Length: 425
Ligand code: PLP
Image (cartoon, rainbow, N blue to C red; front, side, top):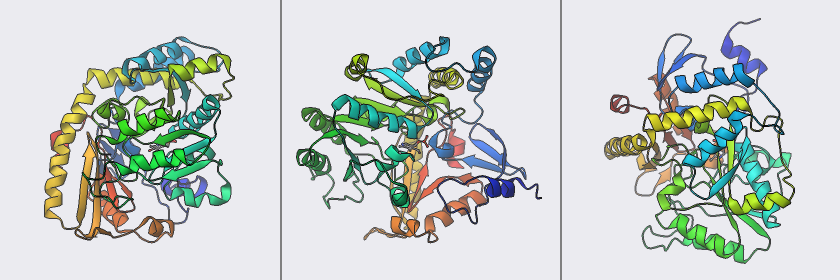
């Protein structure tokens, strides 16, 4: 029997979103701030905040203390009861959520938050269809993977998904799905979603990542989200903003929708809400939706919902974002990061595009800048071909910097506490 931790892990636990053969996870023994260390003592600069979730940096003391204190006071009480921390966490959310989002469902992941949001939208509207976009990720369970447009949806075909989800185009100005020219398109991609609603019956909601995350940090043009919110409202269709990745200061605002002054009917979030130290997902809903469920059955719940051990660190994390002024800092350091990445792009013909907002950036690689021909496609990834981007990320890891790699781009999203020296590194 081996006592190699990586080998034991791979033999007896499932690796996430992959065929299992060949998986040899890095054995991490310590993490602090923007760094973590492997068992050999090698240090890595964590330039994706793990899965864009450790926004406060690793081992934030206030968050850890809150978990420990709550564990000693009241580690668990079932969701039909309440305790101090449940009411206080909701109050704390009100301090930072876009105004108008007033009542919360506390789940245990981004996936579950989206699952609940879809169900709530259907119950509230009495309608069934959900419009999502092809270039998106919303989670891995039946509802949230059904609303996911990216290649992960293809893998789960045999498992069955919830019916009633239809897909439209995303706002991708580098590779416009409607072959429009940036600046002269009139945001045709938003109009297309209106066209879809008008030609479908029974549409309950549109779900979007305000800035598409894993699939390329796609920042929409300025009028896109306001237009989408307006066209949805006119048609009685709810707007669900999935801020699982973009929330908690990542883009230089508490939530990305604030960049465009849009308040969705439902906002889902997770990850940075607790600095990922414990699993918490949040569904924030409008007053109208909250009122609806006063007299209509809220057909949802989990044993672990509103778990005290997840809510205490959420309060501590929000206090830390404020104390360390990290929302401002994300905006400021993000500009610097953008400048540095653009300077790098100017020197490298294989960098086709650099885009982002706050401390949330993508570097997209291409074979040819003029034709924008990619090295690899989503089909290559689905077929499990070796990808150029994975080789780049592996080389970076070898050199002590870790980033997320997806099909043909790197996602650069360091902890919001990152220093200028670390950006230079
Ligand atoms: N939505 C978005 C935009 C995400 O990026 C993710 C995860 O990366 C999810 C939902 C799913 O969240 P979780 O992994 O916490 O279930």
